[in-house]
Each structure stands twice: as C-alpha cells, then as structure tokens.
Image 1 (spheres, chains in turn green, orange):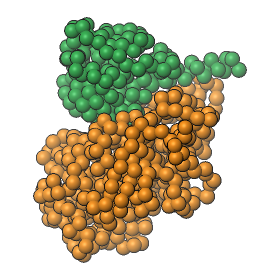
Image 2 (cartoon, rainbow over the protein chains, first blue to last red):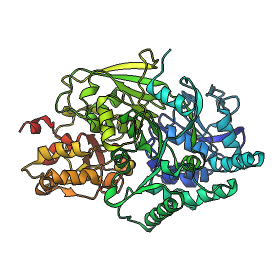
Image 3 (cartoon, protein in one colour):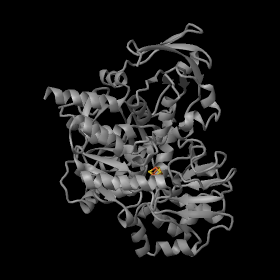
Image 4 (tube, rainbow over the protein chains, first blue to last red):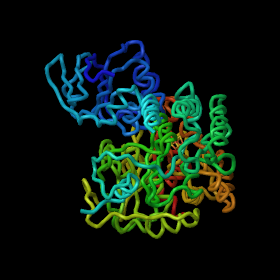
Length: 156
Length: 427
Ligand code: SF4
C-alpha cells in the first residue's frame, strides 16, 4: 500500500448504505462498475457504509481497484472492514464542500492530509493509528495476522 | 474523574485501570456471536472457515482461541440456497472441530434474541458479534458491538480486537412512559433528535428515572436501533430488572458495572416520556422519525412484525391484544415472525398464535426472513417493526418502508393505512 497517492474522484451523497454499495455502488449507479478505474477515489458524504455489516459491499470496492474512500463520516463497522481489507477509509469532515466529481485529489496517510489538485483546496484528517497503518501495509488483516503471528512464533 | 459503563468495561477488557475516549485499546473478548451467513461463501470464496484454517496453518496452532466463547446461530432455517446450506454445514464442521455452540432448529430463531434468551449476554461483558445488530446486547449492561467478516476471523485467531474508546452521549429518560409507548417509539424519537450523524462511532448511554419502567424487551429494541444512528454501542445500566432477567436465563457469575456519578459525557440530552406520542420513521433512513399523526392515512400493502428489533414476546402480546377477535384489512398482507422459538412457543401457550391465525396473519418460522428477503413490489408500501427502511431493503427499491412499534403495525394492518395505535389499544 502506498502512503501517498493521487486519484480521480467519484462523488456520492449522504447515508449510502452498504446494501446499495454492493456490486460496486450498483444500487446507486448500475453502470458505475464500468466507469470506475483502478486508482480512483470515492468521496462521499455522511454515514457512508451504514447498515448491514455484510462484507461483499466493501470487497466489491476493493476488487474494483478503488484506492481509498474519503467521506464526511463512515460507519464504524464499514471503516474497520475497509482497513481490514487493506483499503484506506478516511473520515475527513467538510470534504464534500471542496471536492467535486472528476477532481484529482492527493491523499497522504502519514500526515493526515487531502489536497485537491484541481482547485488547490485542502483538508486534514486524524492520522491513522500505528496498528491501522501496519494492517494497511500488509494489505489487510488476514495477511497481517499471518505475518505477525508467524513472527511471534519465530520469536517464541 | 469517573468513568462510564463503556469505559469501565473497555478498561477491564484491556487490563487497564482507566481509559479515556480516543484511547486505542486491545480488548479481550468475552463472547463472539457469529451469524451462520458468515460461514457461507457469500463474502469470500474460501468462506470463513476456509480462511481461518489457512491462518491456523500458518500460525502453527490447532484451535480457535476459546471455543466456549463462540456462539453460532442459524438465522435462516431451512436454508434457502445451496450456498447457505453449505455455510451451515461449514459452521457445524467448525463446531465439531473447535467446539463452538451452535443454535438451530427449535433451539434457535433470530440470533440476537437467541443470544439473550440462552443467557450468553451478561452485565459487564465485552461482546462482539459478526452482525451489525450485535449492539442489541447493551440492553443488559454490557459492551457490545458488531464486527465484519474479516475481523471475525481475527477474533477467532487471537480473541482480541483493537478499538478506539468511544465518547459517550448520555440520554436521560425522564417523566412517565405512557402505556402506548414502547422501546421502538422512544428509539425512533431519539434517533430523529440526534439526527442521521448524531452518534457516529459513539456510545449512547441510557439512564434516568424512567428506565426502571422500561421492559427488557423495549431496552433490547432501543439498543438494537443504536447502529442505525451509527453508534458504536448503546448501553442501559444493569439495574434490578436487568439483573433479575439475566439470573433467570443464566446461572453463570457476572460482575455488573455502573457509570460513576462524575463520569464524563461528550453531551447530555433529556427525553421526557410524559405524554409522548407514538413515533413512525418515514422511508429512507431510520432517523426519519416523526409523530405518527404526520403519517395517518398512508395506505399500506404489507404489515410486518419481525426482525431482531421487535418481535419478542412483549411485541407479540401487544400485537395480539390489538388483533384479538378481528381480521386485518382485506388489502393488506400481514406477516408475523417471532423473535425466537422461545418466543414462538411462549406465544402459542398464551394463545397468541391462534389470535394471529384468526386475524388472517401469515405466521412464519422464527428467522430473519423477510427482514432482507424480498417481499415488496415496486410502489408497494410496508409498515414494519424492523430496524431498516433503506431503499431496496425488503425488495424493490421503489417500495417504501415505514418503521413503527408492533402496536402501530398491528393497528395499521386492521385499518389498511397508517393509524394512531392509541385508538385501537383501549377497545
Ligand atoms: S432480523 Fe434483520 S436486521 Fe436482524 S439480524 Fe436478521 S437480517 Fe439482520
């Protein structure tokens, strides 16, 4: 996982529940899966991923190559799940005011900043915990567990 | 400076003297609930057990962390797809090889209710569940939250999760609850007051003088709805009523914890229940609640009492009380899905199922059922005692789902349109 990356924005509204995210946002835009390209970034409003904890929704975004989700707020289970799947999920309050669909944004996980390269505006988010960074670096919780537990065993 | 119930449980589970909101902790899990669906290959082609076996192999260990702490329930019975059937078989295999408790058949029902009724939820515990409505258990004074599929595998391997200690919103329930107000009405009102973003990743802690008069069923319903405000968890104090309930269903020891008088809350709000009106949430999101009078006259096609939110024995009694000796409106199909087989058989013993049958209600087996299984055509309107009214939740995206208490659902089924249940309660 890169800690600094740029991507083209697809913008969504508030309160998008995981049932409608399933199948790469199929509930909102059935054609989205054909438009989105690897490395693109989803920017959304409040409560992204609310509702069911079913993992097919976040997995569909990961499998479509989405680089990150940046939203005003993200449901707890959804946020954890995205990180556990190796996909940065970022809560950046206010972002929908200064990012539009089609803009290019740059995300820096270490400094906790987002820059809009299209219009020059920027914002910050709470930096990731070391634990979250470690999971993201390994590509998700499963590979992280495999390596960290194997390490523990090697030390023991 | 004191701590809240949630902070105390988080501190105990992470072997710390005290924690503050925002602290990252590694908490030891007391109980893990897994919905059978997670064992199917719906989320990963290898399935939960397949992935878990891979991890065990790489780690060189042989067993899940603490099999006696893992509880699995079959939320769909019998399975309606080969994939689900294979998931249930995989869950049983996991149980045979690792020793988890599995509830199925007449021992089961909807998992969250089964967890409570079978005594797996006790005050002071730190519980996670592989389903978003695991927050329900907070009604009995424990910390409980939902986790995803991948994280469930992590818990099976390590028995721990990482968590940011949540800030808490204190909701003081004051005044006198009118006889026609249940947990669902109160939850819908509070969610509307908090707004769709009002509790994201926070704790909702209930307290106040009106708590004593709120039934365990209603508390479960209120905590169940917490995730619809995107709260991390919700919790009631483990008062006399809660402790008596837990002692009835479990003989195991537990250590209740209460919030300190000087615990720090991010915000406080007071909700006076005196003279409160029944509440209904308009289609879209559960926080769309308003007093029922604003929806009166809305024609309905389907009325549903079910789900982990509201189909417990109290709900069945209330609905049967309204339907007794009557028949539902000819233009409505009404479905009742009891919360568990415990509730189902209790209802039979009390003669409630017979009342439903005579009222022309379709009774179903106890399971998640039409909470998510499509039953609504385009343009149809449903009033449901469930927890979610998102577009497409129960079928076509253009169907509309209103949420209300079982009393509101039953009364509306008689009238063929949304009504104020108060008119039907006295008669
Ligand atoms: S009843 Fe509905 S909300 Fe509850 S666990 Fe089952 S599917 Fe989920």
